[in-house]
Image (tube, rainbow, N blue to C red; front, side, top):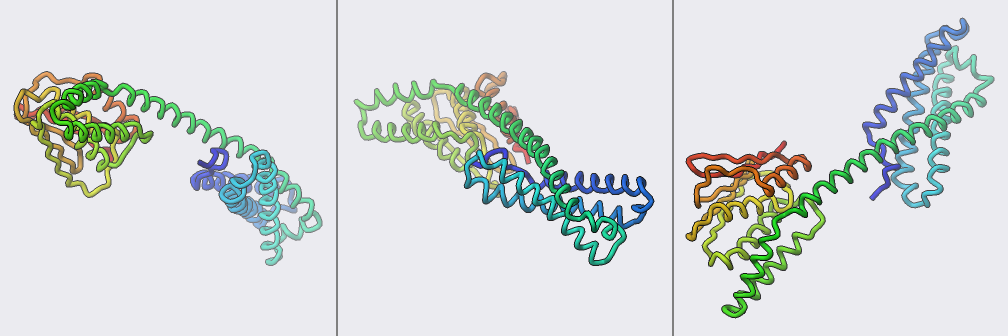
Length: 327
């Protein structure tokens, strides 16, 4: 992954260009009012255009350097290369503006012609110093963002680590009993559990909804060892979008449906995916269902990952878990 020191977004360059151009305008106005010999519109135009040219050269050189040169050299040489490009940007930006205005023979270029070389070196040096300041500013900005992302990732991982472990213990107990009854089915169940746990230890916190549904199907296959194939899963995916969801999000809702809805007979669980994601069942009616640890955990992950919000909807004595997907 590219280091934060090398990340300068297009938005950053737009701000830098605007600030640089306004700074050039301010300096040119200062000279305009300082001395009568500079009181010409060409002074203002030259100063403003020079600042704009310098920022354009800077964005070109620094962007190319960050993308193709710095990643391939040792970090200890970054400062020398970066600030060398900063000096070059200032010098070339000034020379480009000077040459362009010299062609049309403006008053300002006639006045500074004897000092053009000194001014080129001076502007390059000033750009070097400004580049140093901007480097520190942008580096600090992205380091702060990196710290925020690390904190967010830690919060999400902490929430994921709180997922209910009872499923695993129940599954292992059921499999141990199944070994003596149906060894082939026990072997199949162990493979399903292995597949489920393999997906569980993946580091990604957000996964494609198809992968989540595959995990749910595997989960139901494992649970049906205990419930003697009485859990029936019905999935309707009408979404035209490639939705991504937190890992174990739908699985947790299905787990809740079994926990609160199963009453020693066939339980149908319905997963409907369209604009939102909804999980419901035709089992036992629960009138006082609230956000416990698991549901609160899921709602927190949805908000931290900026995906949506979890709601419990009670309609016609049917409890529906609804994830309002943020768009």
